[in-house]
Length: 311
Image (cartoon, rainbow, N blue to C red; front, top):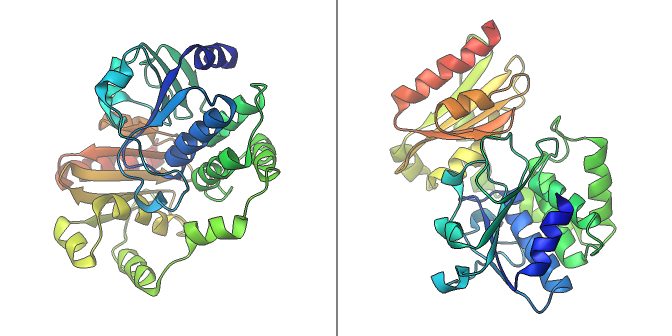
């Protein structure tokens, strides 16, 4: 598959890179890293990246999205990154392209591009892309290595999650060999103001635990307004406060938004991805997401998560 993808990249003069909406470090890292790699090795090609704002990852060099007219999609190649289902793609104009390719590391749901490189044994899409680049004959560069490493370190939970394998560390080492400032990266990723720490404490105080070794947090729009937080930051950013509670195997963060209730599901023990799929979402075996219409539906999801311990 790598060779087919490389052939397609060489064939097209215009390449547009998409990823999922509300990007995390892996989505941004893979998009920026792939674009920088292409710009270095294929300078005559027109390479664009599109999608919504980078959010908290706007500190990354190259995180500003390109403005691309519809006409650019005619005869173009689109590469979709870090996306398991079409509904999550930021900018649905990918359908206008002549050819589409997908790199993804989530559990496979369905085929929706011409060429699909989907491998859930990788801890991150950035890890999969790094492996592709190392096997392409076109070397890594310092410019592409930093964003790819950013995606690997964030999606592996600083190499703590059980998706981390010996291959993960070998690929990370190859990126580090390109040379970049790790201290600066980690300051951008993990340093927090006292105000953010106080907000985190507020979320910790909201944790509820239930039989079945399940924990959850529910946050209303009114609470978010008082905290001065947007729904995505609260949803994705605060699910981790439940990660290391003794006796808790599964946890979920529910955050009210204009789209519905954002659900971030995590487990240290069980495959929670089928439950996310049941509610219209998807993701990894132990880290998935979904959006449900209301908190009543959210509590049905909690009941499903509780049932995992009984099976």
